[in-house]
Amino acid sequence: MTENPGELVEQAVERSLLLIETWPAWDGQPLTSDDGRIYTPHKAVRRIADHIVDHLAEVEALLAGVPTQPDNWQASAYTAQADLAPFTAEDLREAQQRLRRLGRTFALRYAAVEPAEWDKDRSPNWTLRQIAEHLTESEWYADQVGDLRTAGRS
Image (cartoon, rainbow, N blue to C red; front, top):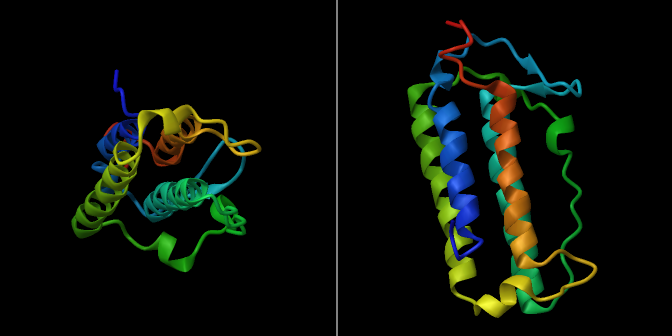
């Protein structure tokens, strides 16, 4: 168990990367989630990164005492042409670098403030702890593609 809730984001990134490491085996066929949205390895990586960036921007605004920027992204409803590209070993390395840096930045940001800030009431927004806990749900995007070594894909 970690004391710094920002470290939960780093841990979630590492759990996601365990699945992402299998994605160079992707056969190029988009996968459909239970709610009918389309996912590919590139889209899942993009959504994990975007989710962290979105909440990092929220944390910065809350700590600065300014309004948060409205979220107008299409998020998972949008599948870009680039999301359909093959997922290569090079893409894996880029995803590892990008996601690990984002997770670490989140943890370091939390480490830079007094622990009392983590649970400070920021109504109508969540506390910083709640934001970090919410970001562990980013693993859901990786789950939509899954472990392609065990999926029988080639």
